[in-house]
Length: 150
Length: 421
Image (tube, rainbow over the protein chains, first blue to last red):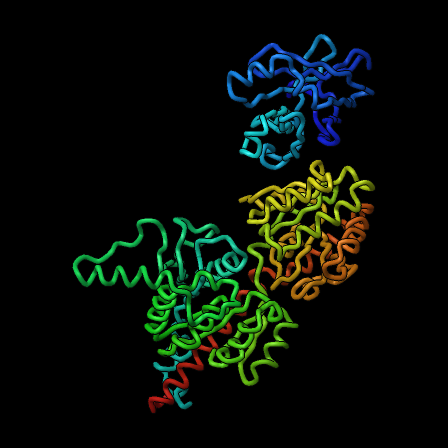
């Protein structure tokens, strides 16, 4: 199993998404300098948030308003008529980028089993979801498209 | 019967040809508990050398969904699959075709509207079933739900031995169904129910009719036992109001803060999935309660858990609960009609709590969550309880019943024809 950040809990509520889990396969030599890293799929656009690390435990959170607040969003929306964006979530100490996911339990097909509620902000519907590889990503869709199946 | 003095006929009498057994199911291609149970019965009978046929009133799928011995023959009365029906040629054919289309649209007139399967019985289906039932002359016909029982009572009158199975408890039936039960079930050779309270109730309702209690059997007792260590509770059933998963989710919300490292896994699919998902989100249980969907490997999933929960509003005899017990899982259950109290001994192999009471369900689950050795103790007792629902304990009772009814019929038939037997 590759080093990764194993999710225990995902809390999408109150306008934030909070993640709790364990670092797996890499010693957290220092509790300092860990960040949650969001990468907009297919781009080099990145968002970073502080992560609290203690032993192998990590915890971090982000306000979903950040995902709606990108400066280029309005322009791009006007061009494309609104498209779904996907952010892949990592945990990083500045050197390694550990993918955040849930790999260590026995449940196969988490995409359809561990399903999280959506939250809405500024015309955007944001929902954490497990990919087919059981990694955690965020899906942002304009509310005009909200409610369609992933 | 002086036949016993005549050597060649003695052999024939002592080993009478076993009657063919036909099970009539509403939909043999479906996935419900009744279907699974009937297939277990059919498998056991055919292995014991009986000639067994499953007759599916309707067919909406290509494949049978449960393991079925290939020696069991399967036939269909009305095939509703796309393209299964070819209109007959010619003018008469077109007339038949139009008539069929008309009858398919008309609601049934033989089945009371309160039968849960009422919507499947249009006039065409009724007509075809009546025509089929009228052809039966010999063997044993087992009908498996009230609607089919009503039709068999009135129309399978050509000499076949008839057994009505009830897979739900009597109190669950709507009034119009209960009325038809009183009117029609006395014509059966036997009415078979699943639990002792139900046997008593039917015996009172149907004086003079033979009512037998034969529980359903689990498919196997040779199961992997849970080690009671994983912090996983399991429930299973169609996602449907009857199963009470809404109350189970509510109960879980009451103990999630005290036992945050426990998971509830609910297996099954069904029309209430979206509502249950919404309830999970409302209580913020999306990290703890999982709608697992349908699985073909429920045995494996049961073995991973540490206890089983039954939150039903009503049952006939909850078979998955007994299967769970065969994996050494203790059970927390509502004391709903009927089944749980027939199977479980409170405090020994499980905990019975007042029906439809999520607080009581939560307390009982908490008790098991808090105590691994209690789970192990009760789990051992659960295995012993499940043993009396094994195929070897149950299926010989069907063989004995069918044999006895068949011999009775031969006796009376012979007498009626004035034969010396």
